[in-house]
Image 1: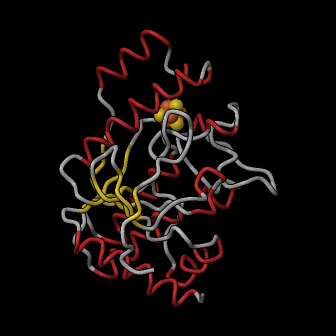
Image 2: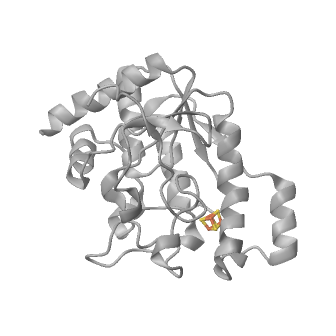
Length: 241
Ligand code: SF4
C-alpha cells in the first residue's frame, strides 16, 4: 500500500472512531508515531482530548518537543503528573531509583508515574487512541486496529497498527512533523530518562527500554498484562480496514 493510501486509511480510522465512540482521548507519548497522529488530528480538526504523561523523569528533549508541539499545533495538551504522596512514599521506602533493583519495584514506579495517571485520564472516556504498531516489538505483533479494552472499559484505536517504520518516517518528512531530537541519536523508542538508552544497529526499536531486564518484561504495563503479554482487545469492526 502506498503512503498516500496509508494516510487516507489512518485518517478514516481516526475520524470514524472518534465519531462513533465519544468522548475520545488521544494518549500521546510524544513518540514518532504519536506525533504523526497529532499531526493528523490537527489537519482533520478532530474533536478529541489530547493528553500526555509527565512522569517527572522525562528527558529534557521530550519537554522541548512538547513545547514545540504546542507552538506548532496550538491545541491544548493535558499533562498528567503522578500523585505526590505516592511518589514520596516510594522514594522514602525504596529510594527514587529503586526501579533498577527488581522488576517489582520497576513496575511499582511505572504504576505510580504512568498507570495511575493514565487511568485518571481515561476515566469517563469511550475511546483511547494510541500509536501502537505491530512492528515495534515482538510483544506488539497482534495489535488490533480497533478493539474493546475490557480492563479499561472502553474501545481502543491504534490507527497506525499496520504502518511500517518507513511509513512513519515518510509521513514525518512529508509534513515536517516535529520529533524528539533523541531519535537522531539512536533512540527509536523513548520513555523515562533513567530507563531508556540508545539501541545498537540491528536491535529492535524497544531494546533500549529497561535494558537491564529480561526481554519479555520490557513493557511499562500500559498495554500489557502482569505476564508481559499484550492486553488483547476484543476486535471490533475496524472503522476502515
Ligand atoms: S520508566 Fe522508569 S522512571 Fe519511568 S515510571 Fe517506569 S520505572 Fe519509573
